[in-house]
Image (cartoon, rainbow, N blue to C red):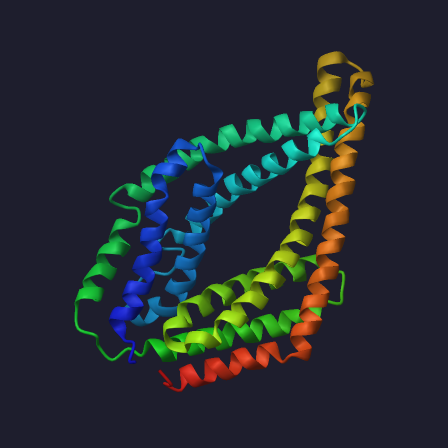
Length: 308
């Protein structure tokens, strides 16, 4: 099966439509999964745009606004996840730790309410004439036009090869305590996963087991990153409570009842971060023994050579 210019255009366009389909649910704010799906769709659209956009003469992810969409949605999504987790965590705490954790939850919810105003502004832009419409119109025209001389398979192969090399190189950080290196690894793994999803029409059944491994590694690295973020947040939020308490009361005695809860959150999340890193290392070691990256590169080489 030959995949050409129309396939490239339709692949990006489908992902943009997935973003649009979540707009009503994100506007209502009643179910946090709509925003989550919109954010994931924006990431998938960015990967597709990086893969095919230059050959189609399209603006990149920054000029098209897609990178900004992901960033804005990311702030709200993090708060959604944090609020949901913290609510469940509070219910299991003893009386000594609960007040601080509940105060933490209150601050998270207040931030999320403020963030919703920014989300609504983003949606207005997204649906307006300067939002996704120009890119969608260009893609719709390409999808209906002549197929041209673009080889989607070659573009997919080149993209997957580059991303797999980056994942392999970042794997050198896995045995270190360089958490920023682990975070870059997670982003690269996520991009490679989304790129391989695009390759399924060309590669078929070879892709599914590769996707499963990448998803597991991404999830474990995500636990590490999120747990470390929680630890920093707990310190930062407790410091703000200290400042507000001192400003309002003139002394810090009321703060004592909040400290155990903030510390309980921090300790729990740092433990989960350590467990996530340990699991990520196990998964990555297993992938290395199985020649996981080599298998991806073999697949990429076949596609880059026009094996569609």
